[in-house]
Length: 320
Length: 235
Ligand SMILES: Nc1ncnc2c1ncn2[C@@H]1O[C@H](COP(=O)(O)OP(=O)(O)OP(=O)(O)O)[C@@H](O)[C@H]1O
Ligand SMILES: [Mg+2]
Image (tube, rainbow over all chains, first blue to last red; front, side, top):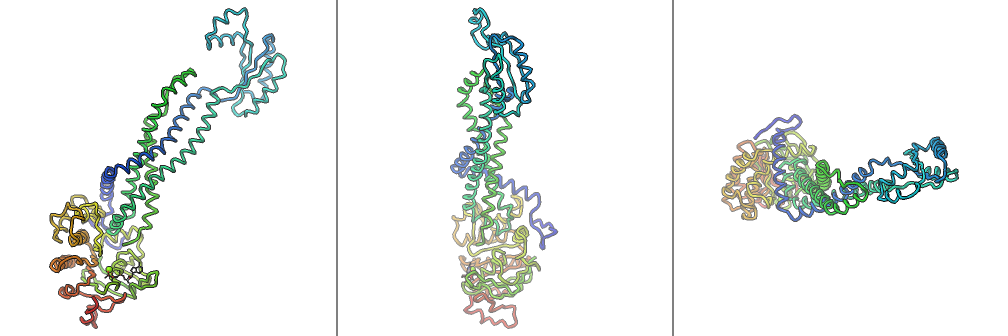
């Protein structure tokens, strides 16, 4: 028996060295894995529950990140198109543009001549032949006005109202593109994701804590004997923290499985959707980092849940 | 390690019952003592207090001059590693083999697996349990289970050995053998305190005897005034 002299102990100190600590961890890890195997039904159930709790916010996170990428090129700024009367002379367009550039809300004004409009129309539709057949260009010239990013939706209406009465202006269209809607959706998803993340994270924590609490009840006899023979609080906690960690880790793995399953299921319809917007489908962020983050999250929540359960219970265990 | 002092220790329970009453006792390191007394006299309470499973209401328990009630949790754990404990009920872990049960204190103290197994096996040999290493506690008789508890208590070669009715389920022959094992440890410097009703056994060993009655010390063979007749009807 090694009896190292501890400086603060009134008697020789047995154990507590680094080697013993390491051995205790190794043995505990081995026994925890064995214990999981011995209670496979409970283990599977806990993994599933934690997995589901983590998969939902994780999936939302993926959706959000991908939407962001999808709308990445768009500057996300409010804008409007000012269509001029067909008969309006070119100076009207220039004057109007100059006028608009003077407004403080306006970031940029692009001039689109009717010829430009025709070109654009031809590239985006299959109607080129029809248009060629027309005697003259039916498309009006227009101005594209991009407002500064900080301008609220109200500012957009204000500019539109100011333009309405101007001579030569046929129509003012406030743009709300699908990308802008995507952005709104993305913001909503962020909030929903945060809420669900907190809620379901707490859920995962609770599942782990409950599972560990059950384990503590089952091991009360063992914990008591351990304490009697001189186990420190850390030593009594250790197997339970390992168990919680393994529950969480398995839950993270399950969550990754759920998410990939969901991705497989929605891949085809999603690809069609993306294709209809002329974008190729490319799911980003479902990578090794995401996977590891899920595992780490599961591990952390599992151990945290175990810690909570153990602290509550260990202090309440008294003697024989 | 191994000197124990009870200084005017009283343990009063919430219901007003005093399980120990103003008990002052001194045990030198490497001594052996029997604690006797009727059921309810306070023997187990004495053990529990020494193990810090319970605290004195008044008075102090000093081990090597240190008030054990004032130990921080971590120090308390390290203190307990010096105690070998045999409780009235052996409290074995039902899902572990006998040898794992015996090796538990060694494992807690950070002993390597091979050393722990070797020492556990040696302790099992001392109490006559060779060959039962891989059995589960439920496969043993109650006397054998009690001996597993004893092997677990001595495996660490503790500085203090506390045994509460360790031979309750053992026949006289085996009881004697166990007491001889305790004596061997005493010879190695262990302070041994055994609670027992078995007056015949206690007498035949000729060690120090303390009798408790209703929580108070009523006889102590170390005192000048001791009369062996005091023990009659006390056990
Ligand atoms: N938690 C408790 N609350 C109230 N009274 C208690 C408590 N624990 C023990 N007692 C009382 O304290 C007294 C001493 O109990 P203790 O267990 O020390 O007796 P003992 O000498 O070990 O008896 P036995 O020989 O039967 O084991 C008993 O009268 C018991 O009823
Ligand atoms: Mg008792």
